[in-house]
Length: 161
Image 1: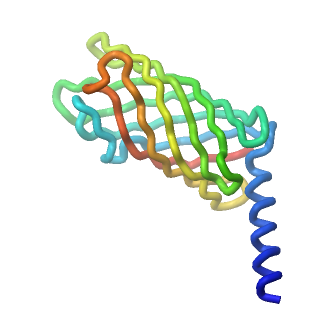
Image 2: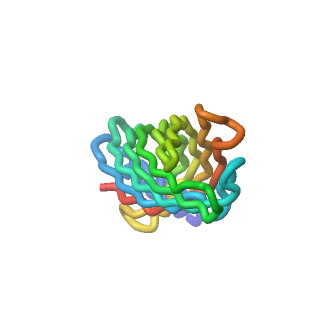
Image 3: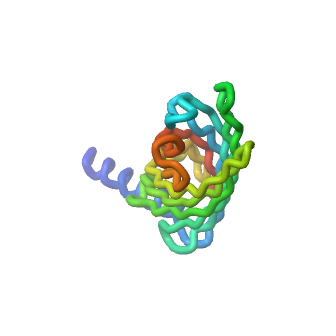
């Protein structure tokens, strides 16, 4: 009886998780990026905010638009703004996802860069539609790989509508 109960609970959890990533749902997210763990050759440590909006075009496949702001406390390092487009695929229906994106980054003093990136994260559901989403990301700088490419950690709150 105990095994049957655990099997039914597992099945219900799978069905509920699957329902979150169905075609036609909208998504919005706010994230803290960097969180003191982002590192690049020129910035060392920084902190930023990012907003994302998305739409599930097919089951487990999402397209995203994003905008963000990054601030570094180091002297001589300009604040940066970025806008971008990306996609996300939910690898398994319990919330593990992989994303790809491309950002156009602009900073003071004429800094402009195109940064393709990848992200691996997990959507941990707090309720029916609200998630906490920790992720690890890598952004590749086209302008100068060694100074501006970035590996970091972000944590966000997502809402699936």
